[in-house]
Length: 639
Image (cartoon, rainbow, N blue to C red; front, side, top):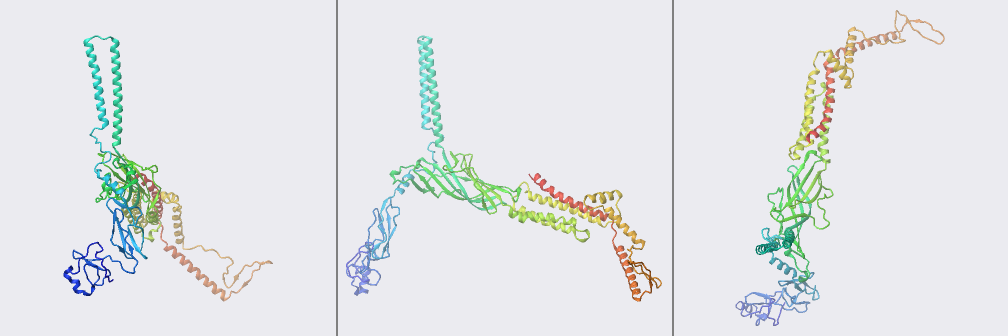
C-alpha cells in the first residue's frame, strides 16, 4: 500500500522521527523516489502497511486507513480497563482483547475479545468492567485470616474465657459479702447482747445468701461448659468409594479411589452479601485456608502424602466450609479365606485426626445422608462389593468395603476337577489286579491333587488356619495314600498259594463277601473243585440223541409211529449213511478233546485270590465312606 499523507504516529502512539535523521539517512538515500519528507508515514519497501522510524530506532507500523476498504472503527477502551491492540481502525478479521484493571472484572457472560467482521461491523458490543466483588471479598477475608489456627481455637484450653472470669469475680464478691456480715455479727456480739430472735433472723438471711450464690455458680459453670463445647470444631463428612483400582488378595492389599466431602463451620469466614454484590458463595484455594490434617490408617503406600490441600474449597456466607477431595488409597484388608471359593474380604479406609486436637468427626452432611448403612451390592470383577461410611470414636472418618467372591469361576476350574480326581480314585479298587497298573494310576491322581493344592495356596493369603478347600485336598491326599498302601498289600496277596484257615475262610469268603454283595465265594470254590473231579473221571456226559440211526451188522432198526400201526422193517444201510455216521463220530471225539484241554488250562482259584476280591470291595466301600465323612469333619475341625 502506497501512502502520501501527513500521518506521523505509529500504531503504539509513538511519534515518528524524520527520515533523514533515522539510521543516518539510509532510507532517503536508498529510496529517493519514495517522497520521504519530514516524519510522515511511508511505505518505501512495499510492505503491507506504511511505517515510520521511532526515537528508539525501531520500525513500527502506522495506523493509516486504507482507501476503498471496509474497516471497523475503534470502540475505545472499556470503563476501568483497556484494549489490545490499540488502533484507530481495524481490518476485517482483526481481534481486540479487552481486560479490566486491578479490582475490576468483566461482567458475567461478556466476551473477552471482539472480532471485526465483513462490512466494518464488530462481532459483539464493547464489554464493560465492573467492580470485582469476588476478588475484593477474597482479599479482605484472607488478609486477616490465619490459616494455621483451627476454627474455635481463639479460646485456648489453658486460658480463661470471659464467662469463667465473670464466674470467678462473682464468687469473690459473694465471698466478701458473706465475710462482712459475719464480722459485723461478731462485733455486735462483743459490744452488745442481742436477743435470740434477731440472731436467728441474721442466720436465715446468711443461709439464703449462700444458697443464691451456689445457684449462680452452678449457672456460670454450665455456661462455661457450653462455651467450651462451642469452641470445639465439629467436622462432618460424607463420601463414597468410587472405584476399586486393584485388589491383591494374596497380600490383602486394596487400592481404591475415594471421594470425600468435609464440612465445618469457621466464624472467621462470614460476610454480609449486600456489601459484596450479593455474593453468597466463594471458592478459594485450599492452601489459603485451614483444613484438617488427616492421617490414613493402615496405609500400605510409603509414598502417600495425605489428602490434597490445593483443591478448591467452597465457602458460604454463614462460614460453612466444604472441602471435597478425591484421593487414591492403598490399605491393608482383613481376608477370611476359609470358605474359598465363597470367601469374603473386608477393608476399612479410615482417616483419623490427632487426639490432641479439639476436633470431633461426625458422619452425615444434610438430612438425606445415610451413615453406617450398607449400600446395594454391585459387581466388581469376580467380587460383589458393598460399602458404607461411618465415624469411629469421634476421631476417624471411615469407609468400610465388604467384598464377597463370586465362586462360579473357581468351582468350574478348581473344585470340580478335584472332585473328579477323587472319584477317579475308585478305579484303583475296580481295576483287575492282573490287567492294569493300579499303583501308577493312583500316584498320578495324587500328583494332580498336589497341583490343585498349589494353585489354591498361591491365590489365598497365608493365615493361621488353612482354607476349608485346601484342608479337604490334604485330607483326600492322605486317604489316597493310605488306600494305595492297602492296595499294595492286596496285590501281594493275589499270587500267594495255599488255603485260608476254616475260620478266616468262613468270615471273609462267606459272611463278608455276602455283606459286600459279592455272593458266597465258598460255593464258587466248591464248584471249581467239582469241575476238576469231572475231568479226572475221563468222560464227559453228553446228551442222548433221540431218533438217531445206529449201524448194527448190516441191519438198521428204525421205530416209526404211524397213525395206522407200527411196523418194523429192516433194510441194508447205504454207503452215504455209513460215511456220514463215521464223520459224526470223529467230530464228537474232537469236541471232547478240546473241552478236556480247556478244563486243564483253566487256573486253579485259590483262597487268597478270592480274598483279594473281598478286600478290594472292602477298600472301595471304606474309601467312599471316608470321603463322605471327611467333608463335615474338616469343616468342623477347621473352624
